[in-house]
Amino acid sequence: MPKTRKGRCVICGATGSSSDDFICDACGSPFDTTLFCKRCHRRLQLDKKVAKEFLASNGFFFDNLDGLVLKVSACSRCMKEDERADIEIYRIKL
Image (tube, rainbow, N blue to C red; front, side, top):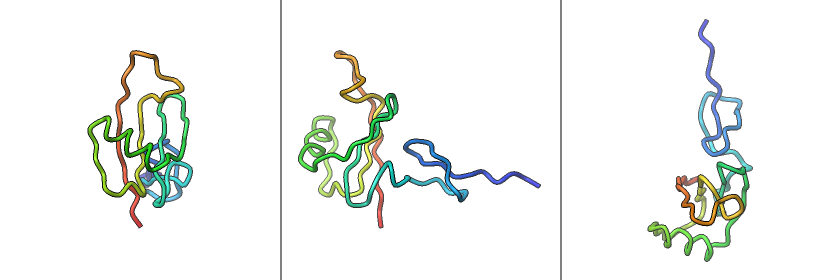
């Protein structure tokens, strides 16, 4: 009998109970804008104005920021001064 693959959080990699991939409660909310750092695993809810400015400075423009999860390769806490981060953007919809 084949093993059933467990779904994982596409942000942090936490294992779920079904076979579907998902975004876990710790990594995102449909009502907030959240940042997750792949390097140091920092999670933070971003103020909408700060998030909009951060995204715009990286060439991304959104009218509605609710439910966005920004997965970055490094954040301000762990990034070297001359380093640039890669950004993956996900959206949680109700």
